[in-house]
Image (cartoon, rainbow, N blue to C red; front, side, top):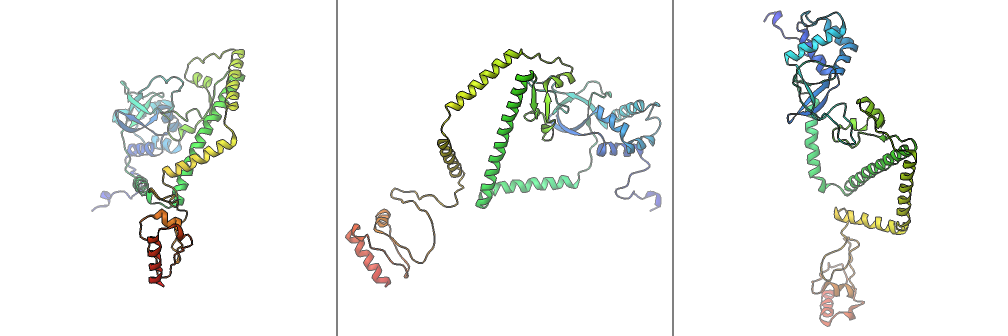
Length: 361
């Protein structure tokens, strides 16, 4: 084959196709991409303002734009060139415009920067305030295969969890309890901060405002660290809610303090709470079958077993024999029978023991 028919080396760009290089750059290193649900399918999308900011500030992207044909890039200003490129990519089907499925926030919630549900926008034109869904998909990477294998391994590990060592089971249990305690602590701190700022200043301050949002992702749930409802309403173009008067807030604070004092007064004693907590701890261990040794044997005449061990000598008292009932008791040649309390046993049982001792002597 001739030199002109050779394919480019792996990992190099196709220099004679600047448009493809531009699309690959935007898909890999372009504006921030999030996932959402569009017509019951999960898709990747980006914001128009992030697209414009990337093309303005990224040096590599500017160099790729300079190599594009002039019929694709029109205008002398960078803003006009970006808009013409975006319209061309829309007409080419690289991405298309969408909008929020939920236009207004739920009561007490805020509109997220990246919505979780999208629907088709009727006019497929470019606007900085719009959302755009990628049609161009990147090839599957090795990280995707590794993640899929990790999910399979995690699923099998969960299925084999009943066979895990005792220390691992306890570790998972205590880790889950610690995470649950952290969630409760965050809720209490958020409530205290909200009440304090509302009473003193009449403002609504939320710590981790997106923590319990149904539309927020894992990383977005922890950003920002705090936010005032008034600031969020101003960014959304809404009028903030006017707070009640200072004396109304003080009256509400007094009612909250009185309620907390009443709960503290009628709370149980410390020793009783500790006993209840210990009882709850034992109940959880028993429910999940996390005792390292059996607690007891079932039966009508069963005695509690503390330790199970294989020793060379076994002592059996008359009281134990009465608890066993009619069960046969056979010992190894080196074992002896303690007949100290044999008077309490019937004559038939005593004679049987003597015969056994004589046989193994």
